[in-house]
Amino acid sequence: MRFTFFVTTGQTILAVLLSLIALTAHGTDMNRLNDYQWRNRLILVQAASENGGEIETLRRAKADGDDRDIVWFVNTGSDVVSNQDVLSSSLESDVRALLEESRSDERVLLIGKDGGIKSRESSLNLDAIFRRIDAMPMRIREMRASD
Image (cartoon, rainbow, N blue to C red; front, side, top):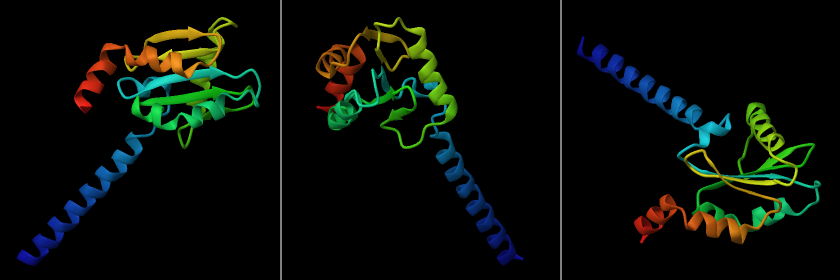
C-alpha cells in the first residue's frame, strides 16, 4: 500500500513538474508586441530596402542592445527580421501595423518598457537611441542596481 502511494505521488510530482516546464516554455512565447511590455525596450524600423544596412547595424550592436534589454524588428517590406528566434504572424502584423500608422518620415520607433513610444526618427541612429534610453529613469535605476 505504501509503495503504491509513493509511486502515485512520484508520478503526480513528475506530471506537475513537466506541466510547469511546458507552461513556462509556452509562456515565454512572445506573440504580440504588448507581450514585451515591462520586459524589453523595442526598436522598430521601416527599412528603405532589404539592403539598407539597418539589420547589420543592429546585429553589430548586440552587446549594447542586450545590456539595455532591446528587442528589435526591421520591416523590409517583404519580411520582418528581428533579434528574436521565432516571430509569430500576429507579432509580424503588429510590427507592420505600428510602422504603417507612423508618418512616412518616422521610420524608426523606440518603445519603452512601459509600452509608450519614446521617440520617432527618420533614420536609425543607435548612439542617439542609446543616449535616450540611458537617460530614462528606469534605465538609470537598472544601471545603479548592476553596480
